[in-house]
Image (cartoon, rainbow over the protein chains, first blue to last red):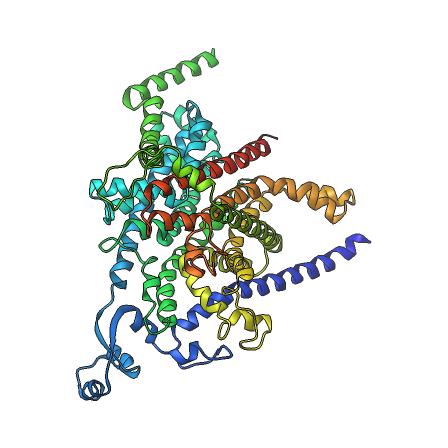
Length: 315
Length: 309
């Protein structure tokens, strides 16, 4: 009897779970969708009561993000309106009585973010995979202490080490430089990379390498030709995590950069205008900032899930 | 005869590869040292330096060399009611947000553990919040919480302007921060739990079913112990991160209203940078450090016990 009953009940349970999962997923998405919508909302739609879902899309937010504007007086405005050399950005600003007086710094900051996040990610994953392999396969003296030390570096609140590093960087001329930030983010992500990758490498059977060593491979060859391809899912997952952390990092950037090497996260709050908060600009900035991360994650989605379910796949 | 022959050949191979390439010992050093040297230069040296500074009245913007003041900074900090309150705020924040994240994250993982059409996409979508920058999330949730035109109160069913001002009321502001943190980081717990869940072999559940074990019993005796190691890793990382929370609070409340969401890390930043009391900040940094290392030590011990047991 139970054999007959079970399939139906199981299917009902599965359907319930699926419906619940979709509901939760939508709930999680509300703030993100709201951000997406706000980025394209004109000013009056953002502060409308009750919150508005339909609106005429506008690029006001993006213009606000990438330009600096000044308010026009009535006379200036009339003169300004007669000019024929206005581009679409000027037109949008003009609708709100503003003139674009120059580009904002946000584009450079975004570029700094790209350079610093990608360089530091490559470095920390490369160094991390070597260290993880050594910890996983070789007898390391006081291995637990070293691993605890590595993990403990990640526990430090950024501001704790920033105080001495600020002084150190000022002495060495690394304050507000790309190299300084790349080094710092590499160190910041190294502990995560080592720990994550050690877990992945531990799960690769040693027998593969041992067989290769017997076949005359050197240890280095065994590492590059056997272990690295096997660990690729783990490496991909680690890369995504490091990339996200470096890309989003705020505290170090706030305290150790000012102009040249400043990244996007500490710049977005300063987009806050003087005449009230420019929500559409903040949303537009956040959106541009979020897109690369989402693309990377979706591209690596299968690797990521496989990397995370590594234990299951080995079975 | 045959055995001897194989052994001989193996030795031959080993000898040959030793000649051509790096020994394991050298390779081990080459692999380990870059990481360890970087970590030591960027953590141990600075920490020794700031240990020294914590006994001085140094200010990074004054052109005066550090002046030894002994334990005065520590006495000032430990004798200050204000700082105790910030420590309490931080403790409350960590317990609330990590506790809720564990519940929500584990719940989500149970919901998504069995594949169905679209479950992969849903899992990925749920992961989106944790990819966002906390400072940006904080700023943006300010709009969501806005008492007059925010969508949060609206979704809770309050009519415009009638709902609570989440970030403007001292009693609610902490919850406001916790809710955002849970929204962001439950997916992280979920991800690790999912990995743990998918590693549970089906035959355990089949055996439990044959034994007519109750659902709760199965959960307690199979699901929970099998997920526990990865769940502990998630809790470990989240506790440490929650202790360090800085960005989110800076974006959401800046520590306010009053000092109801002033966490230790935020206050430390205030003392160190805008106020430039480098010596005092170093002392507070050391107190935070001791607390954090203490907490994480407990977790790592627990983690090792689970792994071995």
